Length: 262
Image (cartoon, rainbow, N blue to C red; front, side):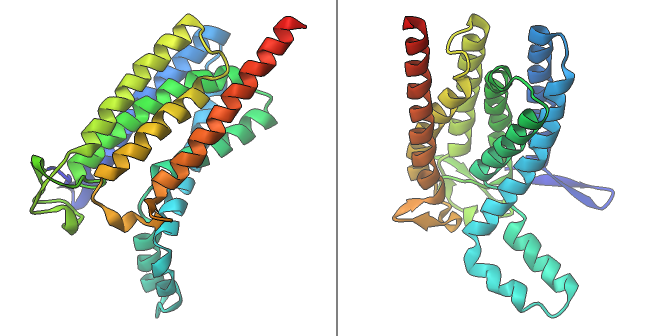
């Protein structure tokens, strides 16, 4: 498709531009919604900024874990420049789940330390996470990463930075996932507006996205991402994310019913 362009001698990737579109769309929406509910948007801004650090660190770390078979290169580097080149190759990508959980951990720490209202913040953040990811997957489609299996229907990459994606017609799974994330954004936004499932929207997002991600993985052709017990890394994480979020939802519902009856 369109992996990017060069300006002033520097390559600008389409993925980076799409991700920035997601940041500057999803972020302001979350801040505006929080300000509307509380009268002050700064707490949400602070949480999002710290979450961004967690997203960057977590996404890179999990990407590096999927490349664990290449870590030996770090110990064979002849100088610092070569070591840095290997490190960039091993940890230079990003895995969504790593970024998601890294951002969640960072946000949780900030909300705890500053005594921010976690229930309100997580409900408001849920639709924005879906929106950000929707833009990110468009970037994946343009760049040729996270590509799909060979198919009679789809697109043929000729300029993907990932050479294994080029030359054959592939199913555009990135666009399917992006479309699903846009649906989740509107669904969660509607529930937020109606005040339905208060304190449970982020868990609902994890369940709905995790189920979809588990099955869409069967249509991904990028086997380099790693496999555990015969399923992909993301499928493995999806199972635990869905189970954990579903248990949380069930416990919250039971607690609320108990409090209502007592």
